[in-house]
Length: 482
View 1 (tube, helix red, strand yellow):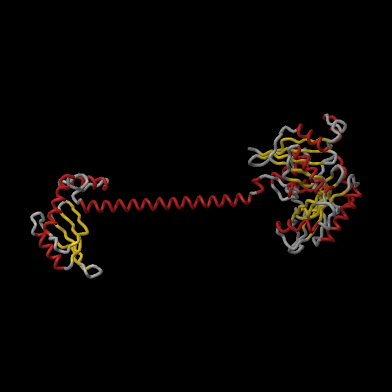
View 2: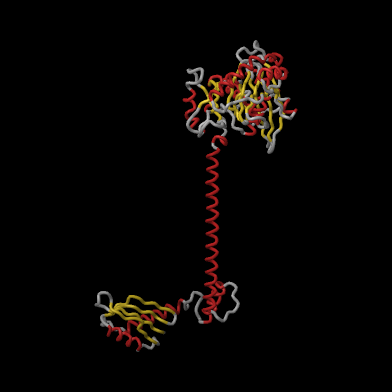
């Protein structure tokens, strides 16, 4: 889905807007509208009809009515440079995080209204010969005026994600396609002020807001003063090689020739090379395109005025969370693969072992398909041929009768006068396992002889005979064949 970005240029006499459509690649300008405050009554909105509503609020309402698109993914605003204070300060570090922590304290003594709160931002110009910590370019706007602008737009359903400076943002946009000399001047003329930017190697190093409707002579004098102040403050030796006017009003062309004569170097009007882009308000368009390209520019959307997008606010945390999720999922897949491999190896080993046992137990069977099932079948057949039941024993009636006869025979053969204690009697088909203890080894031999004299027992063997731990008794174990 394409993004729709609204760029606004908040002038003191008019309000301009440009709608930029951002597909997956590139961008296109959908619409541009300019509403003059003096023409508000033609739109059915006059001071008499709405006495408690400012002209800016009425202009925003009229502007939104004239725009084709009503919903925007982001809003970028350019405010007049006359309401912004620009300063150059030097700090002994370059970390943006540290700079933001101390920026307000460092600028407190440099701003014009000490009793007012300011919202400040900064850029890190690349300067040569300025040491390890070149001066920062800072911009500060009173919190009161910024809040009034922000709340008016928010009430209209427009919450800006970028609030920057007129003139400065236009120069920053045009510098992206400029391949001129190292030291240049840029001038942006608005309704009630003029913005002057000093540029070194494509980077804005100094911004100054001048008065409105300055003549060529007065403007040249202000430019000389600004250049001299820059050279005294820095060691760059700023020597302008040309001057570019970003304004597209009719008087901009007329200003070029007299200003060039006063300055002594070429002065021309800016050109983007695209007639379609030249037809739109430069500052509104530049603000929208800065939001599209995400260039590092002055942005006063900080603190209470920052964008509340969860994605943007927690991008770093989301990235870390996704990394841990991917790592955990990868570990899970690795463990799952290892477990499956282990189980497959175990299954293969058990199958091989069962085949080996089957071959050893039934060597006559040559074709083995399912060793477990075939072994069960073979065992069942053996039990049936040996006269045993499926449970591996004689029928219950015969087993119970045989057991009583055997116990009676044992009691008959072993006299009551002999010191014998029976601890185990196990009756299996075809044999008996008899365990117990007696007074001495002679009694063990005597018991064996007595049992051998029975017609019920075919053979009596002494499997084991040993003294117990106390040494007073002899434990024995007989295996009797029936």
